[in-house]
Each structure stands twice: as C-alpha cells, then as structure tokens.
Image (cartoon, one colour):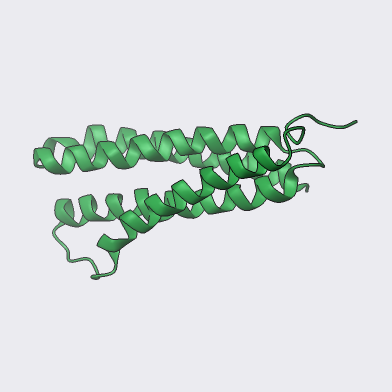
Length: 138
C-alpha cells in the first residue's frame, strides 16, 4: 500500500471519528455538562474536524516529487490532533464521568497546538522551497 493511500485512509478514519465524537458530544455529553465544558468539547471537535479535512487535502496532493515533506507534515499534524483534541476530549470526559486525569494531560493541549503550527508551517516551507512540488510530474 502506498504512503498516499495510507494517508488518505487514515484521513477518512479521522474525519469519521471527528463526526462520531461530535455527535456523541452533542447528544450524550452536552446535556450534562457545564457551559465551559461544552465550549471545550466544541473546540476539540472543530480542530479535529478541520485538521482531518486538511489532512485529506494534504494526502490528495501527495505525488512523487513532494511526498517526503508532505508525509512528515502529515504525521506531525496527526500528532497535533491526538495531543490537542485528545487532551480536550479527555478533560471533558473526566468531568462528565467524574474521574481524575493524570497531570500531564492538561499541558498536552498547547503542545498539540504547537504541533499544528509546526505541521502547517512545514507544509508551507515545503511548497516555498519547491513551488512546483504541488504539480505532479508525469
């Protein structure tokens, strides 16, 4: 299986997961949460969904001339989703179900945000470095 195909499959899985978590949050969690946690859940889902869609676009742009930098950027962004949205989902679920999270979960949110920024900057740098990389050379 090619890297492009793998990335497209992972992107589809991430988008479907974001949709499912959004529905779960809206219909199951939302009625029992304080307003600040509803906002936190909304932020987690918004970033998850937008980055999932961005990853799908990145995977679609992969070709033999740009696959190296796009693949690295792609996986940096996946880590960003896991850290940023995952930590926010964890915070909300811990409040909803009343359990304590390990202390390292809270700092994962800004670290995930940094991964988002690094990932998108690396995409931009890659295209800046090779303006023709987005065009497939057949």
